Image (cartoon, rainbow, N blue to C red; front, side, top):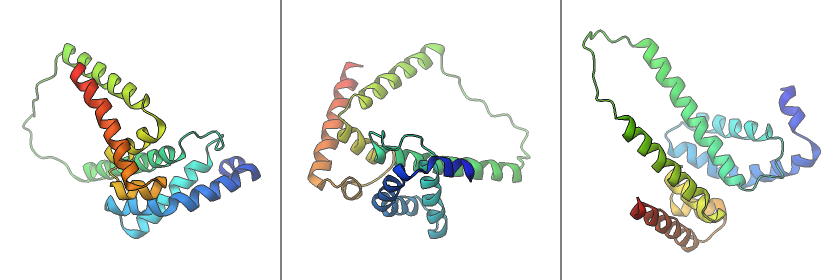
Length: 176
């Protein structure tokens, strides 16, 4: 706990409180939509903010919404990974039949990595609001209404930013 309290200074206490005020409900809805119980969702929201408090430079966050929802997404992935590992430990496959799958060629792996890097660069090159709307919709699974609530934009603005993001990515797709 002392590591956490080292990061919670009087200067960033106000910003932590404002982040909690803005993002607590959207985070709770996000976790509930992902199928977590109300209790687990509340625990996850607390864990997200516990991780936010550990951030050295809260004032320097350019995209707090993206940062917070990335933490939330990673938290869900960690939980899922732990649950799978736990289930795998409990379950032993009695089948001795090996499962074979065809390995992709080195050329295909390289091409896939290059395409992924191009898409990543295209997303990072988007204007911040467009990038945020795209990430929240496509990676976090939020609906336009929820994105509007979280960002304070109108639904039509969210739609506009989403169309802009998709147009950019479609242009990239045509070039590939």
